[in-house]
Length: 336
Length: 193
Image (cartoon, rainbow over all chains, first blue to last red; front, side):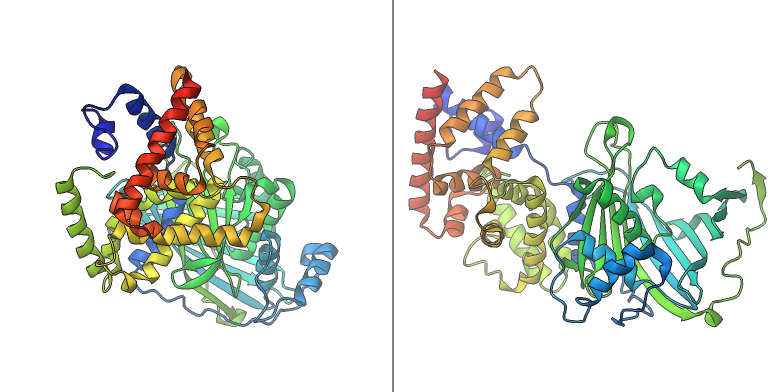
């Protein structure tokens, strides 16, 4: 008895003729080849597992559209003016990814204030679609971001601190502070006390380093909703087929608009699929899922899932001291 | 797990009923069911939607909807599989209604055939030819008959489960499936020869 006999005992038995067996084999191949992309798992897992109750702290629910300045130029002003007519609490569902992204950029502007955003990132070693249990947990990361805005709504300083941990122990800290078109960064391993950096990189150099990887994964501003939205807006203009708005859904209890992006220009011209989840009311970035392609050569790439933990706007006077200073720990220097 | 031995099926059914019961108070109990059915639901929905991404999104919606409706599952009315595929079927129909008649094909079979052909290695010429013959044979079936095939092969449902999903008796469903396979067999081997 073959696998086909075992799978279809109601349609095939030991006495069935060869033509029937061939037909069922062909039908089996026809219907059973496809596999669900792993990116779909994330929102369902969030709904099933409900991560430890970490309410988003300090989230602003204001829907008042703050006036724009010349940050994005005249064309953006016109777009926002048009949007102002529909950007209201009971606005109808937006019809395009472009609308979502424009609202995300517009909603993020602050004046004489600072934005504090924290994400929790969970990564899994290698995508193993359809397996039970799912792929091994690789690590947990905390992504802590500050941005300060001046009176005109321009970003004057930013910081991003990534803290990797495994089984409750910090394994690595990476930190960058930026201002005036340049960033200073370091990476530190507490266990070995090795410190890499500080190094200084201009925005131009950073952009050059990312030429092999087009798209928000590399080119994003600081990983805030507005930063991602600005990059996706550019991507939408140049490669609209790579950006797709998916049906509204819920993420961790909040209604969100998922926007899916296919990366490209990885080796073999295959790249991960990244889904960004923008809050349907406030347009902040509530989450992100990065899933590598199911293809030979990518089996060892991790999947990552990012969830918003804190989103808070505070007056500049309330920003903790030294927030925008690099302050690398003392450690054994290694070459950058 | 595609309509296999009666004993294995019985064990799984008890297991799934217990998981559903626990899931009402602890959603984490639903997770094994998600991993067990995710690909099957997706494959079924691939036959109902013309694009792979639509099927993936619908699959996600089906399970999110299932999580919202855990309390509505009634084991006396059918198995977990029948319940899930009932949700999937309604979701596909709703989606089709929302998108109106702009869909070129009636269902996703074109895309499924293309995928199946594309997944073959170059040496499997015979199998590729058989797929072409099958495509012609499938074109002779009604939408209802193709639905039955999708539930049986893509979804891996048993006859009683299919009957619950389509709203007919087990006997009527069994007869219709057998006639469908026979009809398909005649056309498949007619075009083959």
